[in-house]
Length: 467
Image (cartoon, rainbow, N blue to C red; front, top):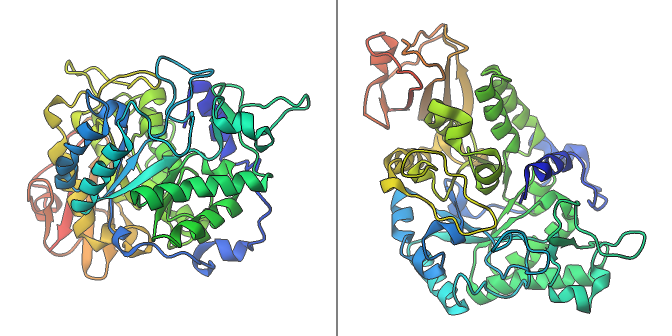
């Protein structure tokens, strides 16, 4: 959750500074690499799952559960397994930003936003999603509430106060929300009760937890245990905190990889920084941890620009990279339409007001469908330790062509990416891939590229599966 460009900078700093984190007695050896002590186990269905962030307000002209329910078959057909719904609770009115307010200013943790429909409408949505064998996780805002949340009046001691006794926001720019105090055990109990409510009453399948690094890890550990006692859940942390993966969360954000891609696009980083990122993951996180890879989400789209703005003509090259490099690929409402207005201009969705997605005849639907199907069908691309090993394939065009393979047992996927504005012939400088590989996009054979008969077009890409 980010509100302005200023708050983006603030939050970025918080990823390395857990100001409210409870004492953690887990040893470094337990957290890193292959020596981790792990309590939770991922749901079996998640091993090759993909995820789609749904902006309920903007996804349809109506902005309702009933309208969204009609789109579920299309999302299923495209290859989506997990639907992450941005917060669906009522939005605070006191100190509200914009006309409709921030989704992340929660007025009541146990109610449905009437703008989206009724509880019965949401139950019907859940029933349809489960009928299609899709999972649904809700965005949960545990770090703060709206200023007109009932707790402000009934339990002011549940909030963080300054030296004068006044309740404060988490950071000054987040003026529409009040910071919750996790030193208060009664508040923790009430928060877990609210989290359990949606699992019990609506059969949701888990949560995406907003600014998870700003809430103590021991709270998340207790939450996961409480939820799993009702049904096995799937938990996503908006963080890059390794101890989250031991008992609480199945998956965390690959923010660092997004920033690496953005840096390459700006000319501030090189393709070799991808190798450095991959090498770091082998020691920075437990091998069983799922990482979520993405080129856009609600924060990036609204505050930093659409994928087309940040990556230009290489947009699809970066999408292919994010969907195949490691972890679970994420899509966000509007990607299938190119995050653009009908005239092709970038569409940054307004955060605090109604601003419907322009689907543009789903111009990129086939592109993403092929990538999602490749992720589902090829164990080499699966999530966490279910997936295959990464290997950089050197070429003579190292600053323009990035090639790599992912291998799991007898399944191998080869990815070729041209980051330049020139059509280039592939020149492998090391051992050439051996065997028959076919493209998931046009069924071309890798042999055509290795013999130099077919160049990789400017900003071109191929994902080859070994037969």
